[in-house]
Every structure is written in structure tokens, then in C-alpha cells.
Length: 168
Ligand code: AR6
Image (cartoon, rainbow, N blue to C red; front, side):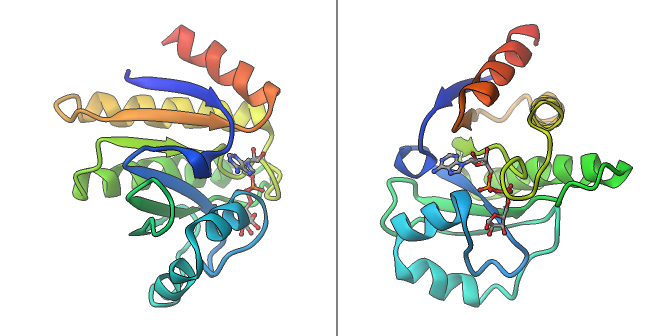
């Protein structure tokens, strides 16, 4: 699997697309969402207003505006409730973001650790879901060349991703 793990600020990456851990309004918020809106500029909010929101597990695409990335894929992770649904919804975020990347001819994509901040998803569980969903997607699309970058903002997530990736 063509997956790279890095530690740092996703807004500074040069990938074709970066993924935003948004909320269902798509109108901005805290965490990585706030950082992306600040870095991309006001035009991003104007485009997001036209989208009419996004359900949990789904994804929408906008331009990247002032970012180095050409596109932003906005996905809405689940608020963690320790229910069976959590895993399915989080997995859908990765799958639906990858489907949008394919539709838009995106060949490099960077993901933050969706739901593991304000939405409270335990980091280890979320990392497993992320790697497994991306592994499934790339296996099903082995003819499509895409670099996937998992961006961690903290050491714990960085170590978890590296351990999981090394097992693939
Ligand atoms: N670059 C990379 N990762 C980051 C960055 C950054 N600049 N900033 C934070 N993270 P969160 P969620 C990490 O809370 O849990 C917003 O208000 C962070 O350490 O951003 O999906 C939305 O509008 C964590 O590991 O997203 C929603 O209301 C991960 O990104 C809600 O938060 C995700 O943390 C979504 O909550």
C-alpha cells in the first residue's frame, strides 16, 4: 500500500488534496477544520455555503484556495459513542474521500486523524479503522496510482500509524 505517515500541520502539505475533519454544516469549526479554513481563506467558506451540508460518513469536495493543495475533501466523522455504528461511519469517511479522489483525478491525498479530537474517538481504535479502510480501498483499486499521507498531529497517533503500516 502506498501509505506514508508524517507528523505535522496538514494545512502546509503539497498534496493534490487534503481532507478536512468537518462537521455536518461544513461551515467551519475548531481543530483541523478551523486551521484549514484559516489557511484557505474566506472563499472556502463561500463555496462551502453552496454545498448544503454533509451527513456523517459522507464527503464533499471544494477547491483549495490559498492552500498548496488543489482540493479540500470535507468529510464528517462520527462523534464517538462506543457503538457499532461508529466504526462503519468512520470507515465510510475514508472510503468516500477516496472515491471522490478517484473521481477528481487526485493522485496524492492527506488525511488527518478524523474524529480523534473534538469528536472523541479513541486514537488507537480510529487508527485501526483508518488503515483498514484505506487498505481495503487500495486493494479494490489496485490499478489507480495514489499516494496516501496519514498526518498525525501528536506522537501517539504518529506511533500508532507507523506500527499499523509496518504490519501491512
Ligand atoms: N493538522 C493535522 N492534524 C490536526 C491539525 C492540523 N493543523 N489540527 C488538529 N489536528 P479535530 P474531529 C488533529 O478535533 O475530532 C471541528 O470543530 C487533532 O489533533 O480537528 O473530527 C469540526 O468543525 C486530531 O488528531 O476533528 C467538528 O465540529 C485530529 O486532527 C469537529 O471539530 C482531528 O481532530 C470534528 O472533530
